Image (cartoon, rainbow, N blue to C red):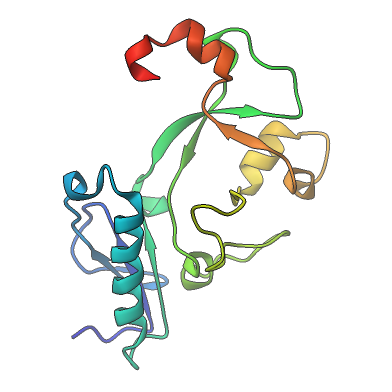
Length: 173
């Protein structure tokens, strides 16, 4: 049994039961090969784990992330911003770091929202895609404005389709 006010379940290897300012992190090893071709199955698994953990009266808050910010977990991704000219070379396509997080992650980690909204249970596959960006991202791409200027912007994950077709071999399409 885990007695903690806050529980962060990380879906990548971390130090077992590491104590953070927010509470306790617990590694949740996931055999990714079992879920590679079935993202809805992985979502159901994560939902079931969170429901069980959150039902424990000793746990005040719990969330899942693909990597903790302070531990360097996460992935890199090329992005294209819809409010500017499309890049024509790979070098013009910006790369950003990202993590997957469950609803409740920011509250669990004690991260305050500057503006906009955070993820909810309604943010699922098949609904309007959403992203939560930090102030560094907002200032990087909208340096003349306020962090609010990022709200409502369209961010495509990956390079523009025309650029991707001209750069990537067909087997990666």
